[in-house]
Picture (cartoon, one colour):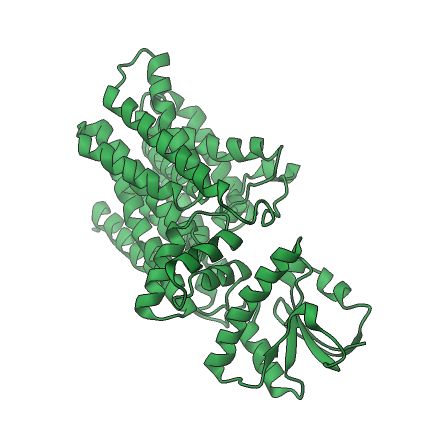
Length: 474
């Protein structure tokens, strides 16, 4: 007869292997998305450090920490998009283990095994582990920061407060939304005071020093930005958002999102007595609530919330689900819920490209610039440009021209398309009788066809969500 612990350990081992595999397999299958192109442009290793910082100020709202790392990696390993993506993948893999250790810090039972399974197979985390952006680094450092403070609450060792300070500074230098993580941890002394629990003075002093440092870093960063809010294209969520709170994106489908959301709410309500006695869970519940509350309230002034900006909300979601399920006293219900959530999580993988690519042709999601440039190179006309009318200002158009030019020239050089000429929108004149226009549906949506509706179309082609048209210049 198979030992149940052996079976659980086997499932854990398999989930780890598959989770690591899915964060590495076909990592460069898609071309870069526009945000990744910006990262690629900013971290050009041929620039000196001050030039890199100037590019960053002109194009990115997030602080420099992530870009500095990618800049150094490009200097070491060469200037290639794969370098940044493999770094995100590496951090994504580390996040599986750090999340498991974080859960192990909270409860000393098999809960961490369920948590590792859910982190390993989470489609949202897998996706952003394959993208050259800052979000997985923020997620990983957030787990480290929570580990340090939870360990301090357990051991009362002051070096852990110092490590907490360091991780919080790194988070602040990674993404502005990480302030929510600090705010969530800062709620604990307030909770202790209200409930007349003893308050640790060293903890309070560390929070005060860390909070002051975070505010200074944030102020200095945003007071020196050159782009202001030009890059903020967010909209305040519609009423539909409040039916799933991005859970449909986080767990792969609307059905799975609703199942996880309802299960989480049920467990929080059912086990609220246990939850409110545990300092660790109080912090996680605060993080869950503030991750939505803060950006939604701020959004009344200026919309800022998106699912990726609060990627760290998956930490409390998955940990609370795992911990609270294991706290259910009725073994039949507990085992059913564990089996059910494992089953639907694993079954959902067969609906995702992560798994489907193993037994059928993988679909492209991001614009296929490689195929578009190959098509242009094989055509009679070698001149092309990217429509940049989506940019709000002339300064943005200028930056995006350079961002696209850098990446598209990299592709041309890599494939030895020496005759291709990328032209600025502002320099189109009678010198060019015909021009190829590249327009991404991910940026414009159906407006791609409307943009060129008043021009004479000679030829058109579509590469997934990249619309390519040859037009006659009037």
